[in-house]
Image (tube, rainbow, N blue to C red; front, side, top):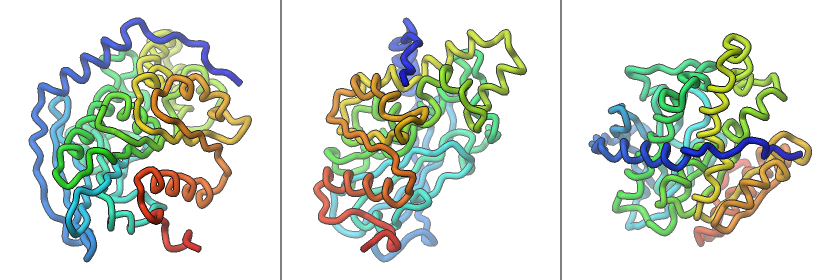
Length: 305
């Protein structure tokens, strides 16, 4: 299977240069408050308010280990949905013992839903007629702003900052040079215009729904999506990278992702999905722990031997 039929927009680099330049005009203005209920004897949790492009006020969960740093950092980028957790569901809370962790709630998500509360389904097509109005323009900027804040924390080891998540992890690593390690599972924003018509599953079915309702806007929608296509971000990624590909024969298997794999400048490992949260999750944890120089991976208790 191949998906490289679209072309990179002629104004792709200018578009993202302008987004970052606009973001830079807004001071981060952090407000930090301790969260005793989420703190432990080995890590202190904080709620953090930040300003992003707009201006728009964001929220993040920050956890800092007890003891002397600097510590390696895990930056958890949000999944497509309304809720972000301190540590993503299914991952070990114990990772907070040795890592600074930061999970950003982008605009529209709970705790960052004033004045904009996103609809799910629905957010994927919000403002999609124009790259200048597409909601993901602000969401990507939110992710970069969170990275900038995290990297500036004195407790963080600047040589070990991992962006972890789906599409937004890769775009953040491409636009934020502070990312040294990347764990990304392409899901929504890879060759979206080509892949959406092949499925009836949500969230990509949101694209199909929108075009059935607005068939005359097809070219405009495809133009917008091309500005967010992961294929065009690969050459900007210098981080040591783990790409979590789909199983062979799936829409986002290693063959489909090959154009992206070829363009990433950093050392890249590709893991093919094994249809097991345990096996895939354990692989990712062991990969990152090894590259961070950790003695043991941070595994949930029920994953441990």
